[in-house]
Length: 276
Image: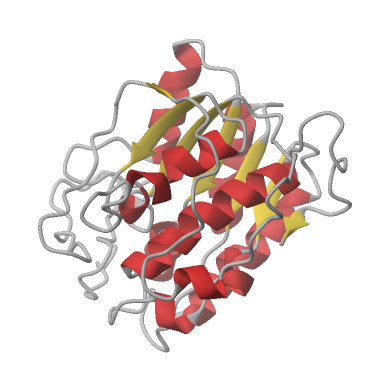
């Protein structure tokens, strides 16, 4: 029997278990997002401002005012765990122009499907919400074909650390085999914790597993969030982010999608799996 991690941050869950540890959200009143929202049709906004929450504006790279770059991705599914909650939350980002749907729209995305739920992993389930594999499977069965942003791995890593028999490599392979040849950008992970299943040493194992897998999938890219994120963007739990962190995260993920899958006439495909 697996032993649940007791950090109380992202709800490590045993495969098939009915009673996982509760999720502690990083801000009061922020609930897990439902697992099957309707696609959002989004219109490209005219020159949304750069991140302004706290210090994000000063520390986030900014494109030139007339930057023509756009992603070739017109439809995007974003599957994430609680580290993505703040990307769509008015509690964290009261200015809708800073949220990730607006950032994706700025880069040319016209259909955005958020599939974000606290404690989500690829294999384990939590409080009735489907795991990431089931979410992707349902979308494909419904006929979805487009681009995928997978902001996962924090809970998967912790689940493996406490004894899950499903390895990190197997989890990544499950998602890539299911999605097939559609464009996929993973967002890698980072932690400020020194000990426990959510430690940075464990997160590094996930990031390395992504890099090893990427060589086998021409349609796979990895956004190196771990290299971009600043320590000041984390809240005290060492896992989740401040409003400034989420403002920067939304902007940088959207910009990374352009670098990973640029529109025709752009700079071309990146020369390596890792996008910075």
